[in-house]
Amino acid sequence: MYLNQREGWIEVITGPMFAGKTEELIRRVKRLEYARQNIIVFKPQIDSRYASDEVVSHNNNRTKSINIVKAREIMKYVNAETDVVAIDEIQFLDEEAVEICEYLADHGIRVIVSGLDRNFRGEVFSFMPKLLALAEYVTKLSAICVKCHTPATRTQRIINGKPAAYDDPIILVGAQDSYEARCRHCHEVPGKPKKYDLLDQ
Figure 1 (tube, rainbow, N blue to C red):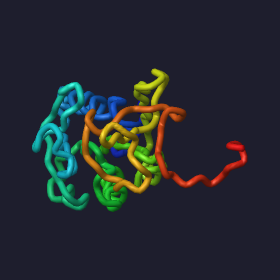
Figure 2 (tube, helix red, strand yellow):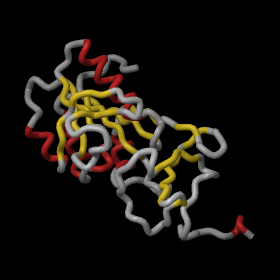
Figure 3 (cartoon, rainbow, N blue to C red):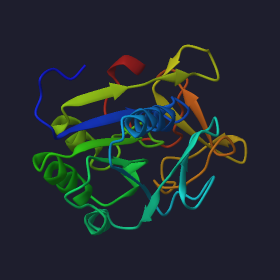
Figure 4 (tube, helix red, strand yellow):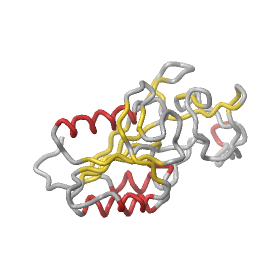
């Protein structure tokens, strides 16, 4: 709910894979289109899983989008007529995305972004904590753990049928073939350093 607020703010939709982040972003975009808002949708070029010029959810809902490599490219498309900027999978952009979201919101544009809050190791994903702290509104979604069917807040990477090791690269774009939703207790990261051993004795 947005109460008597001047135009211009940041909304972040976050959570693990398969939680419905892109689905929720598309839902908000469609509502704004019905309201005849001037909206521009962006996605990182690295995310080409389903379409090159559309944001597509796992349920195959979709909306037209512009591919970008660097966050700064957003500024080439925004003008005085822009009401809303939406960005899917924002964690794949560079850290300047945070400053650009702030700039747009400060200049009266509603900014809606979706992205992972944690990487496959269960650690915070890049600049996402900063963006979450600066946002006016945060929607944190959960998925369903494929192992125990409780709420899942983490993304499990699977390589050749086994959990990916801690030293695997952070970014590996994929879908069901590479990832699963897991809860805290079913999430596995072989080789992850332990900071505390007191409770493991």
